[in-house]
Image (cartoon, rainbow, N blue to C red):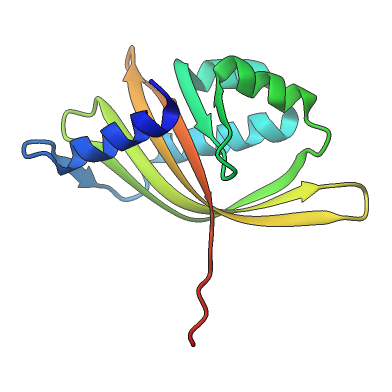
Length: 153
């Protein structure tokens, strides 16, 4: 199932009666997973990506590019403009009552080095879906959107 369809189905599930999610105060394990993914990308550590993402992992970029785990690992290794720094500005996780899955939305500021003098800053809103496999949380899907600021008229 394409990533956009998977995200739509998941969000649809949230609206169904009987699907209970509880908001929690920053569970350390999910935030640590997020930080580990950010570090893995900036350090080009594909082993870490294998460890923290499911085999069916999907990434959807702010530009609409969809990648599976193998494509994501290749993109991380081949990146000529590495991510220098990512700062988590806000983070709001939700966990299913049966603790089988979770999702989180967060804002992130990312610095991408175009060259030694030019650094581009991206403000992104990320949604991640987490799945518990063999008692351990893993990332199932990451969707990035460009943060848009609306100015008053």
